[in-house]
Image (cartoon, rainbow, N blue to C red; front, side, top):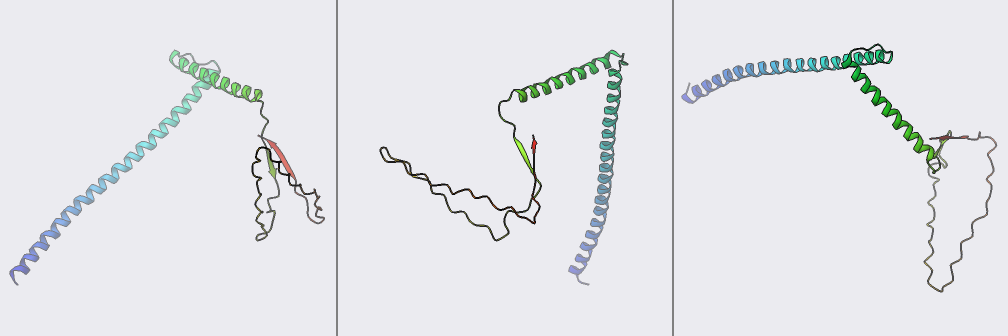
Length: 171
C-alpha cells in the first residue's frame, strides 16, 4: 500500500471516530432538549390549570359574597371592587340604551330574503347602456329637457311558481 493510501485510510478512520463521537454528543443534546421542551409544556399546562382553578375559586367566593357570607376583610375588599366594576358596566349599558333612545336617525332594517335564486339565467345578463349626463347649463341658455320616464308596466305574475316572501327585521 502506498503512503497516500495509508494516509487516506488513517484520515477516514479518524473522521469516522470523530463523527461517531460527535453524533453521540449531538444525539444526547437533542434528547436533553426534547426532555426540557416536554417539561416546559407540562409546566405551561399546569399553570393554565392553576389559573382555571383560581378563577373557579374566585367565582365561588364572589357567589358567597352575594349571599353575605364573606367576612374576611381582604377578600371582602376585592369582592366590593368587583361590585363597583359591575355597577360601572351596568351604568355604561344604560348610557348606551339612552343614546339609542334619543337617536333621531331612523332604524336600519334588514330584509330577510327567502328566495335566493338569481334574477336571470347565466348568459342572459345584459350590459346596461351608459346613462348620458347633461352638460352643465351656461348662463342664459335654456335648460335641457328632462328625458321622459317610461310608462310603468305591471309585470304579469307567474301562475305556476310559488311567490317568494320577504321578512323585515329590526337591528
